[in-house]
Image (cartoon, rainbow, N blue to C red):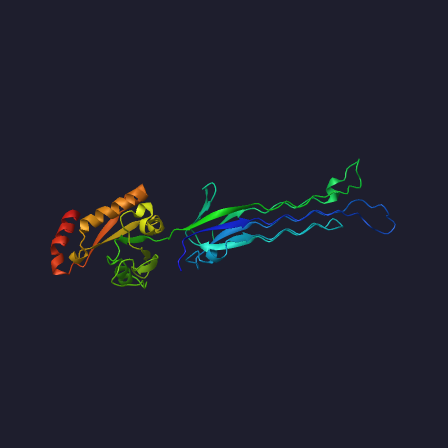
Length: 301
């Protein structure tokens, strides 16, 4: 299952409590305070992992908390800090706060990390409260509870070229021929239900990533047909291949298809509407497709 958007709850580790303790040594019946501080709670980080391609792991578990700090001890021994929690996500994940909608980070490089929730401070031991007027304080702080918040994780594929078009236009066939990708190919609409990535080898030293995106339909910019989920994966592309089906059996005009998809891109994002496109007419070998091919060629001219 391909999961490209999820919400998770993260919480920093609680701080450890400070200690109330007094020196107990031979011949020192009234030793001073020696309670140590509690350790700080662990923090929560997100890290981009190139080995991951989906947010599926977070579909089954939504709540995460870093380790709490250990409590302080006598003899001025401070509690150890809690271990940080690192959550691994695919490269290309955008992280935002669910409540404020603030973007916290865009993890576009392998190993890139962002701090999404800091751990809480540990409490002070009674040694911290000693003063000239209070030499034997019996007071210590409890550690602070860790703060938490909901995050929205949104995966936007890192592809150089995106292949777009109506359902069943031949996008998957094209990608399977120019790369080693093996998308599902069948003679019915919406065969591709999740984006598929392939690597196109130009020569020994150069290559680029191509993305087979599920078919778009009118209303995609408003979310129809899962349009939002598909369109987000075009945002990072540098070039769009627009596949047009010239088969008259579809009952559609390829020029109308081109106009509809371009309008959906413009509704979703102005930058997408300005993205360079290469028109790829498909099924031009059909004899009855000749008039349609000529119409597309005139448009290109």
